Structure formats: structure tokens, C-alpha cells
Length: 197
Image 1 (cartoon, one colour):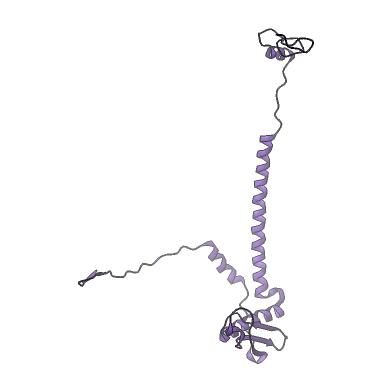
Image 2: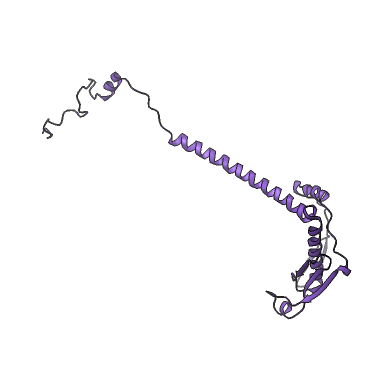
């Protein structure tokens, strides 16, 4: 550590040390490596002799740099007749590079069909998304079944054991004598329906 002192300021300078961090392998990245080995190679753009290149004025957002300059690139592959256009950036050179990549991909799809790189990648992505959707459906189906079981247990029919006639009479009497009358009340009502007072 070095120390510099002036009348207004004291500065400490610490030596810089670098440490290396070991990053553990993640299953996601190892899967990507395995997939890239099994994928077809990236298609290369066709030679310039098979391409007609033209520069166009762009459209959409981007201001004057897009609308008043010929920065958009349009390529036509002469043997197949495929036409692509790129105006992803405001730079013509970057748009040329992107247009050639897109053209190479389209030509690969046209020539190889289901064996092209984009078709294989699309099939892998579809398989993964289908697997994730199936897993999600299974999860929510199990949750719904558990919820239904819980509600049938809570709201299910409660079975009360049947009582014999003797037990009913014993439980309905207030003073210990079994009641045989039709009224559960203790005789406060007269036969005419009026209360005794």
C-alpha cells in the first residue's frame, strides 16, 4: 500500500490483485455442447457470383439515417430466385453481413428441406417445448386431483351411526324418564295451541 499526502487530500493506493474464479459446469451449457455436435454445420453464404445485391432506402423507425440513406440491403440468389432484405441496423456493412446470413439459411432450407440446420434446430426446440408443456400439464393435473380429493374429504357425506329406539328415548328425555309423547317440549302448550300461564 502506498500513501500520498498533500495539504488537502490523503490518497491510499492499494495493489491490484487478480483472482481466478472457477465456474462450475451447468447442465444447460453441457446440453448445448452436445446439441451443437449433433447439428448440421452452419450454412455458408453462396458465392458473390450467384448473388445480385442492391441497396434500398429503409422504412420504419430510425429517422433520417434509415429513411434518406440507402442502408437497407436486398440480395437475390440467381439460381433459386430467393430474395432477402435486411435493414436491421443503420449500417450498410452490418446489413450486408446479416443479409448474407439470412440468404445462406434460406438457401439451405430450400436445398436440404427437413435436413437443414434451421429445421433440425426447430425440431429440437419444438421437442423441448412439447416436453415442458407435457410436464406442466401433468403437474397441474396432479394438483387438480389433490384438490378434488381434499374437497371430497371436507364436503363428503358424513355418516352418523344409527341409534336404536331405546337410545333415542334415553337421549331425548330431560328428566331421566323416557318420553312417549309427540311433543318434545315439556308440556307448556295446551291442546288448543295456547300457552299455560
